[in-house]
Image (cartoon, rainbow, N blue to C red; front, top):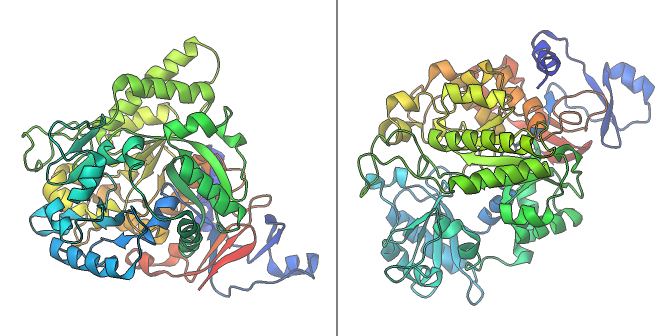
Length: 538
């Protein structure tokens, strides 16, 4: 990001804010005095937001729009306050109730999202025997809140082909006899194709609801990460039908990128019916709360059955990662890389550096493609320095501090390492244009709550986790506006309220810069405007 862009945002702290914005055909034409703009365009329609604060529309740093749509029609297995499943017993009872309210087609699976073993007694996972209490005839799969683990019943184990000793498990995955599947054991294309979920008609309606849901949090540009062919076609159809009212930037799974992603600079990929292909997405490890993230040092408390030096695991072979990065660089694809653990981040740095050197020996394709480290939970300071030199950006899942900070402190990482998860202050000092995200549907896409957490860094139990990694309110607002636009190559059209940019706004009842830090989470969204049209109003 240029210093001019950074300086222009910081000048906002001392600026006298204009009270009028003139838009035409979805574009900002003038910004200034309302009275002067009214004289210039006397026939213009007027929207008066009173004493509200108008900011650029929030830009999602990373999430899964399709999965959010799924979550709206699947069983909610989350604990309170997002659900009612604080124990395995409660989850089983809630699932039985849900099963009685729905009609599944022949062969359709009972699917649930969001169980969290961190709140269960003894931090244990669900077992297939427990899920068999819901049904032994219907295949059941309940995904962990991280999205990297999945508990299944006996029927699902059979359909996956995991019901016999010595079964074939995809590379990068693990299967426990209890019915717990890890990573590629259920995420690989071959295994994902086994699952029969909701119908396209159900999903189309759910995508419309999901789009509206994002808008209710002030988000005008969403993301959908690691999209496969079926989801891509559904997103395009939803866009053409007018079901998606905000913009969505789509990152494709590697096998889908080969077929659909054009070989051109990401900035040249244009929107069609609010959908745009942003690049490709790859996973290098799992999740810290699921204890599958790949760390350089052992987990504070290793999972049961693992050796004392257990550090999680990679999910990709080194050579495969190098070759994929080379392909991205040669094809001029931006790549989003899921990397939570510092060992996974090290693998990304190592392989991307190698790929850059290798492509320089050949022909072209070496311009700055802004590769994004997604989640970046346990990144080390020296790794941030290397990321900056490589032109990488980071998107931090900062809400971990609130939702799982106490668990990281006591079980996952221990006090010292937990205090520097999502080190925003270090990233700011290294001048990395980072963004914030919620990885929805892992948690709701509440941008203001992420800003609150970045400023306060307080856990559920009230512990301040890494006071020296706090950032200012303005820096957090940068992350979800101007930095968000830069990350997706749209800094010329989004991220600021200036002439010739999209008329994308969020209207807040209070100014976050004038609100007590501990009260930012309570600010309400008044309206969300996309291309000059209201897409949400309280």
